[in-house]
Length: 124
Image 1 (tube, rainbow, N blue to C red):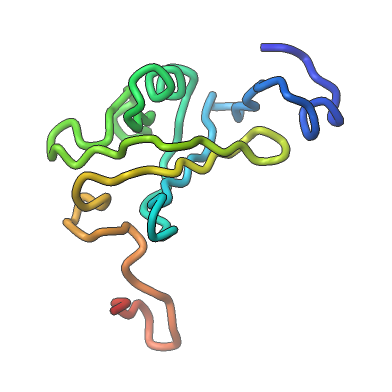
Image 2 (cartoon, rainbow, N blue to C red):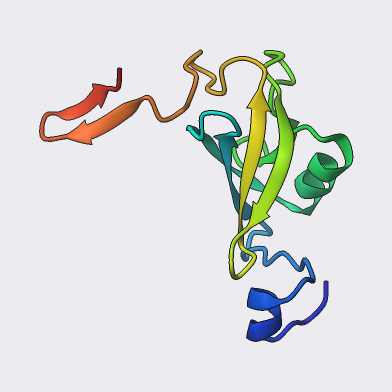
């Protein structure tokens, strides 16, 4: 990975992901059509490479300590339409076409509740 100046990292054309101390980047999956935030997960180098290679969202499972493809058991894959990189290259937005619900609970999005004065309230 190239060693870039701040200006090069923030304004240049070189993709040089800035992984954290655990070797991870945050990745937010957003429905390309509705713009709804579907999920937040983490990618390591392997997950990022596999995502770019296959066009399907792959992540690093912190709980399992391994690579996983979203939908590998449910079939509810996330097809990548575009990957956006934040200014300092330590977070990604994945614009995706979901094939089924994104949340393991069966909800369309993992963000199906809001926090209010009483606690958590279901949205919609």
